[in-house]
Amino acid sequence: MQHPEYLKKGSKIAFVAPARKISREEISAAVSWIENHGFVAVYDDRLFAEYHQLAGDDDFRASVLQDYLDRDDIDAILCVRGGYGTIRIVDKLDFTKFKKHPKWIVGYSDVTVLHAKMQQLGYQSIHGTMAINFEKNTKEALESLYDVLVGKHKTVGGFLAPLGMTTALNNVPIVGGNLSVLYSMLGSDLFPDTDGKILFIEDLDEYLYHIDRMMMALKRAGKLAHLKALLVGAFTDMHDNTIPFGMTAKEIIFDKVKEYGYPVIGDYPAGHVDNNLAIVLG
Image 1: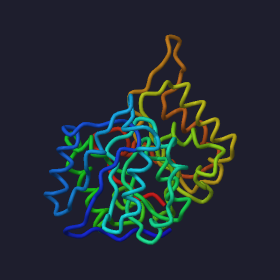
Image 2 (image 1 turned 180 degrees about the horizontal axis):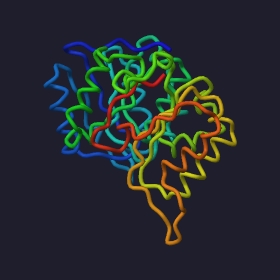
Image 3 (image 1 turned 120 degrees about the vertical axis):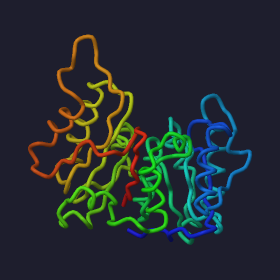
Image 4 (image 1 turned 90 degrees about the vertical axis):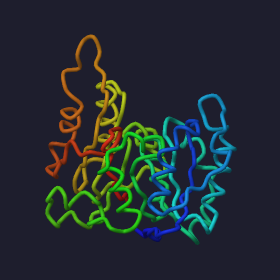
C-alpha cells in the first residue's frame, strides 16, 4: 500500500470531528504540541458544531471532512475524538481529489472506519492518539506519532522492532482497529481483508460476553483463520455480569484463535490507554 508524504516543518494538520462533539479547551494541548513540533494546526469554528452528542449532523460532518480531504495544502488529518458517528458519514465522502494528494489520517476507536476506507483505497494510515487525549498521553505515545508522521519509525508496523519479533513479520501489513467498530462493518465492503495480514484489535467499556460474541462472529465469518499474527492492544474497563462469564478478555480472544497456530502478541500499548503507541495500518 502507498503511504502519504511524510511531514516536514510547516506541514499543515487539519483537525476534524467525524463523530462526537468537542470543545476548544479539549483540543488546546494538541494545538500546542503540533505548533511546538513545527507543524501548523488547521481548524475553524466548524470543528465545534453541536448536534446532540455529535459534532454536527451527518451531512455537516461529512462536508467538513470532505473539505480537508480535497485540499492540496493539507498534509494530515487528525481526528479530534471518537465516540460514535464515523460510519454514518463514510459513504457520503468522495475520495477522488484525495487520491491526487493523499494525506495521513490519524486516530483510533471510531476512526477505525476511516482506516478501513484507507485500506480499501490502498493507502496507509495511522492508528494513533487523538487531539482530546494529548494532555494525558505519555511522552512515548506522542513521540511515536511524531516519528511516524515524519518517517522515522523503524519498521512498516512500527511495533516489531521494539518487540524483537522475527523479520518474517516485518513487511506484513497490519489491519484492524477497534473490535466493536470492526464488528459493525462485518459483511460490508469496508471490512478489511485479513488473510495473510496482522490483525490488530483493541476495545473499551464492553461486557466480556460482548467480546466473546464479536470474536465468535469474526471467527465464523472466516476473518481469523488465515492471519499471519494477531496483535492484541488494550482492552480497557471491561465489565462482567453478576454471574461471571468465567474468562478474561485476553482469555476469550486467545480461545478463539489458539487452533490456528500463528503468533498472538498480547498487551500491546495501543488503544484506550495513555500510552497509545502509533501503529501504521496498511
